[in-house]
Image 1 (tube, rainbow, N blue to C red):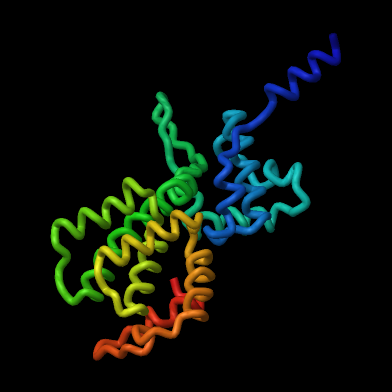
Image 2 (cartoon, rainbow, N blue to C red):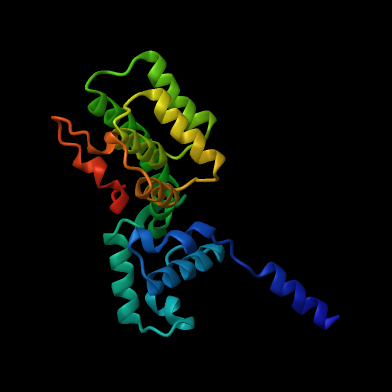
Length: 226
């Protein structure tokens, strides 16, 4: 019976940690010590202690209070943590930590980047075609994004490939994307490798075609530009 109680305690005495904290923290400019402090803040929040002292936080860490204080300050400066004031029924003010800024960055930043990337695609197409896109062309780009679930970077890569081949039209770009999909190409790196292999065996006149506009940004995409 005692063993069963111990197992129950292990099962129920847990905190819920969003997986994205562990997978995305480095992209947010956080290090391991900062993440560990965040995890301890989550633990205290679960225990209804929303403003633990540095002394309380370091009880189960290898850092001292001074370093913990510095980390808390850095988290606030980086916009990952905030201190909020709250008022109880007796009109008494108190302070509490909030990790909402961190969660907003974790779950909103990539969505914003995706929206920005999609918007950039239309700008790139219009710049390269030298004119506004027609409704049909806009619909085709949206089909690639929404129905075919092609990432914006891969569509940009197909545009660059069309420029490189001197075949700047939507049918050719659509053909490139469908060919990549058929071959299981879903990333820019895979597209680069496929295009590199193709160009090594291709010596047609399109590769030598020069245009008045500077398209070096597209010609160099195989070298790593995204």
